[in-house]
Structure formats: C-alpha cells, structure tokens
Image 1 (cartoon, rainbow, N blue to C red):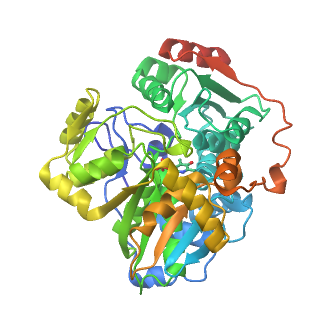
Image 2 (cartoon, helix red, strand yellow):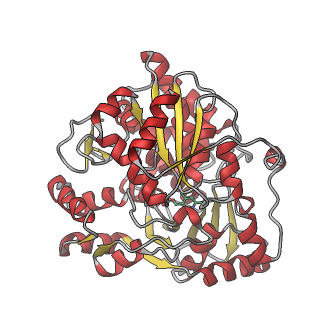
Length: 459
Ligand SMILES: *Cc1c(COP(=O)(O)O)cnc(C)c1O
C-alpha cells in the first residue's frame, strides 16, 4: 500500500513513512493510492467482535508490512486498554432511530484519544526499531493537544510540543496539557487563535532545514494514521445497528474535517452509509461551502464548542482531492488561492461533494437549548460539540437510523454545560484531582522564529 500527496508532486511513501512524516513535502496531505474494500460478508462477520478485533480487520489492509499481524494486534490492544468502557465506543439510543456514539471514554475524554493512543503506540514501535528520535509539534484547539500529550508522555524517543491559543481553551483542556510532569512534554500557549497555531506548525514543516534539524514529526489531524484509526468506529457502530444488511447515517460535529472524512473512507471501503452530515457551529465555513461551492474564509468567532472554532479546515483538502478525481495540480492551485482568502470549487467537484455530504449549523442558542432538552428527553448530558451534532442531526432524521458522534465528555466543558442544563458535569473519578495538579506552560508570541527558538532550545 503506497500513499500519495493530495498536491501530486511529493514522493509516494509507505504507511510508516506517511505516518511519521505527517505533512507531505509539497504541502499536501497523504492519502492511500487505492482504498481497499471489505465485502458484505467480511463486514457481517464483525458483528459481536470486540472493538480491538474490528480495529484490526478495518486497518490491516492499509498498513502494508509496517507491522506484523501479531505486533499490530498488540499495539491495538495497548492503545485501547486505558479506556473507561469495555465497548470503547458504546452506542446509546436518544430517540427512535437516533443514536449517540459515545467517543469520550478515553484518557482525555474526547474522541481524539481513539487515534492518538494508537499513533503513540505505532510511533514508539516504529522508532524503537529504527533507533530514531523525533520532535512532535502539533497545534490544538484544545483536545488534540491533550490527547497527544497523553499518548506520548514519558516515551523515550519523542519530544512533544503542543501549541494552543492562549485563553481560548477550556480549563480542563488546558490542565490536561499543562499538568503532565514528564520532561518530554512541552505546552506552549501562543498569543493568537487556533488558525495561527496551525499556520505556525505548517510553516515549520515547510521550513525544510528546521524540519531536518529537529526531526519534525506531525500528529495533527492531517496525519493519515489518525484518520485511519477513526474509520474503525464507523464500522462498529453501523454493524451494531444491522450493517451491512441495513444502511445507517452519521452526523459528525466537524472542525478540521478529520472525523467526518474518516466516515467517507468507511463508506468508500464498502460500509453502507446513507448520509454523512457535517455539523458546524457558527464558524460555518464547511456548511457554507457545501451550500454554495465557494470556500471563503471569515474571522473565527469563539463559541462554547471551541474545538470546532476553525476557518481553515485542513482535512477538507482530502475531500477536494477525491472531488477532483485525484487531480493534485488543481488541488494545489486551489490551496494557493486560499492564501488570498478563498476559492470556488468547480461544478463537477462541487456536485460530488454535495452528493456525498449534507450539512447544517447550530447557533450558540441552538447548542445550549439542545444540551438542556436532550438531558430532559433522554437523560444524556451532552458536551457542546456533541450538542451541535444532535441539533443538526434532528433536521436529517428519517427512515434510516441516524448515529450522531458524541465527540467529548460533558465534564470537559463544565461551565457551558452547567449554564445550559443547570447541572454540574463531574469528571470521572480517575481524573478527579486534575484541578489540584501543578501546571507547567510557556507563553510564546505568535511568531514563527520565536516558536522555533523555544523548540530548538528545549530538545
Ligand atoms: C477535534 C474535535 C472536533 C472536530 O473534529 P474534526 O476531526 O477536527 O472535525 C469536534 N469535537 C471535539 C470535542 C473535538 O475535540
């Protein structure tokens, strides 16, 4: 299995190389040259299997000979051992034909643990084989950073630097990044917003001498390994509702388009998915794009669902690549136009996107009202991101079962949840002392040279 860049000119890589590299050298994102498919019989055989067994079935065709079957099974087992629920991703019913996929039972209480815990294991296995040491630099709107730190803390061949927008993450998110005491963990609070942090990381990857110097590696949601790990729960959820014999739909609270793109891969692999619904908060560039065909940046407005406060949605580039039939040159040209504020998707590609993705948005009031009514109607206390999803899903309910992804635990956003529902959302007992642990963070200007200097000095 080879991986190619969405911009068409970077060299093709193996799974291991694509995973360790993150961003391609032409600025593009890696995608598999072909997407393997599973037959209905293979999908039907997943019924009743453990999460880990399905994870192996779904991901095995993508990893080539990076790991042996036995080693890959061991890595998967270690990745999910720390989850607080035996099903890993349990499905609960909200209403007739509407289900919630709880993706928040991992160590940092957000769905990003599914990918990050596995990436941590895969990095460690690959690096201890080669004897290399890498510097992981990532940008976060809150949850990626804590998930990455949790996955890499204490590993001997990795330094992990996480850039987050100062003052724009929740206290739980911040504390999950600033309280680990391991020397290889570095939380950097940047004076800027998430897009600034993400742009700084991209610029570091495009600075080839810095990239070589510090042996830069990326684990942001553009990393193919992360997208792949997220494909798994589309299968477990759909199969538990009767796939492949019955279709299901998914609604996904979206920012960087990673999670919803994993659903698209699941569909291309043969999982019978009817609708894939993109749910945005009022930072609705994806919803507007899917309505108009024009991808136009506006400013980012802070919301109570901060992990979706994004205007530059990195993984959307992968969807564009498929929409343009794999034409890397066109994708590269459109991404160039994005630097000047936006681009118009051509008619054919837009048609493909509209056929593949539905969308909707939730205002702040919609989100708060949904937290309150969902608690009253179903007993489920939603985090604000999941509430955006449930709100949008309600406009797309029909004869096909709808599964909305619950992307974080309500305790990660206690203030917003309390304000909307009147109820406190306590942390699970295993992290109840989070507010007492000492914090360690470096505040840095929104400036590439300053950030690079801090990184060089620390490693
Ligand atoms: C990251 C995140 C999202 C958005 O996921 P993408 O894959 O970037 O679209 C939604 N909700 C929560 C809680 C998150 O942490």
